[in-house]
Amino acid sequence: MSISSLKAKLLQDKTCWVGRGSRLSEPRGNPKRNRKGRTKRSKGRQNWDDFVVEHGDIEDIIQPRKGRKSKRNNNSTDLEDAGGMDGKTWEELALSEKELERLDRQQFDSMEKASGKWAWMKEQRYKSMFEEIEHGLQGVLGTGSYDWVDRRVFDQVFDRLTLMSIYKLMKSGAIDTVEWPIARGKEAHVFRGEGDSGAIAVKIFHTGNAVFKNLLKYIEGDPRFSGLKRKHRDLVTIWVRKEHRNLLRMRRVGLAVPEPFGVLNNVLVMEYLGNETSPSPRLRDVIIENKQVVFDQLVYFLAGCWQNAGLVHADFSPYNILWHDGIPLVIDVGQAVALAHPHSQEFLVRDIERLVTWAKANGIETSVAEILYDVLNTPPEELLSADVLEKIHNFTRYNEEE
Image (cartoon, rainbow, N blue to C red; front, side, top):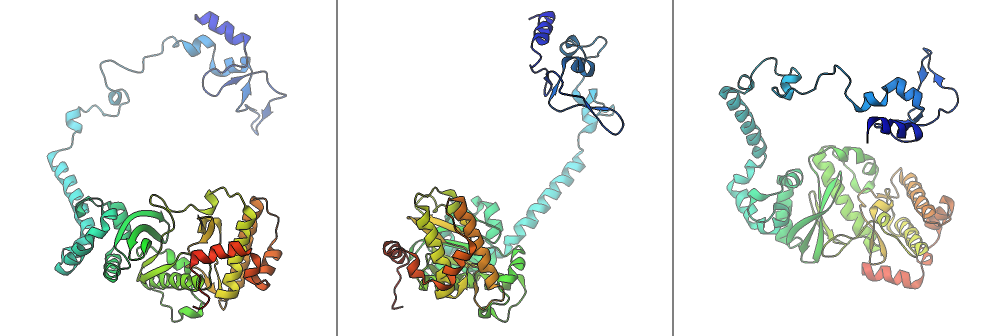
């Protein structure tokens, strides 16, 4: 198509696109002016005459303007055209042998510094310990020797305290293997594994960050954890013990939570929820058919926590609820507090507000007042039908004689 025919086509169709982001059309109303009296042009449509004034005629857009120099000289490089070489040759810009040696030395020093973190593993007592458990860590080490480890995960999670804890838990039979990661967060990584109880979830809490300092409000005031020390490692240990005790307490009264199998320092071993390839999805990620039944089960959990377990979850949301075999199972109960905690009532109302938000998003009409009354006054068993209650009890292997 010639230049003249292209221009004629553009003049006939003033709503076509020319260039990038320039929409041609008739102007709308009077142009706006800024404080200096200049016309403000809209980011959307503009008319043909304004386009020509702003950008030039179509021949100027498509053809190079007269006298314009080529951007590229066949006898020079891009750096030379831009003046980036300052008249120097490539040989003059190349690093000297001395500078290369200095860079190599810096890289070697940084690698030595990183490897020094694991120097303790060369000691005979730790070396023999690691050799005993190495077979059970192939999932996080990779296949083969220690040199093939996924260092990003290993460096972040498996420090000396963690490996020592895993070693003792393996000796006790709570852990046989640690295989692949199933979840990660600010406080912990969770791995699928195998143990004497079958498939397990190994939750390893981080010892190298300060996130637990922000969780003090869930620990201070809880009479079960008096004499609190504020050292970071102590906070981690207390938090893990707290989650373990909360799981035991909830499970004992028939609430749908993972069964805990063992705990040591920053490692918590509990029931794995999922199949051979992936963990159970979160409640927020699944489509539920009978939403009212699920809602009733969630109210039952809050009421059972308050009336039977004497706890408030304090972080109740679809992010902390898994959908497993048609039952909503609550996880991440480390922040759950006893009723004697000074903020327990505040945390309860917050949990109920989040449940109301989920319910309304799923077409269930309810209110904070209605749920709060049931949580405080209605016996939990009356909130569910007999078959749903039996399903939950079968999952938790609830025994009223315990």
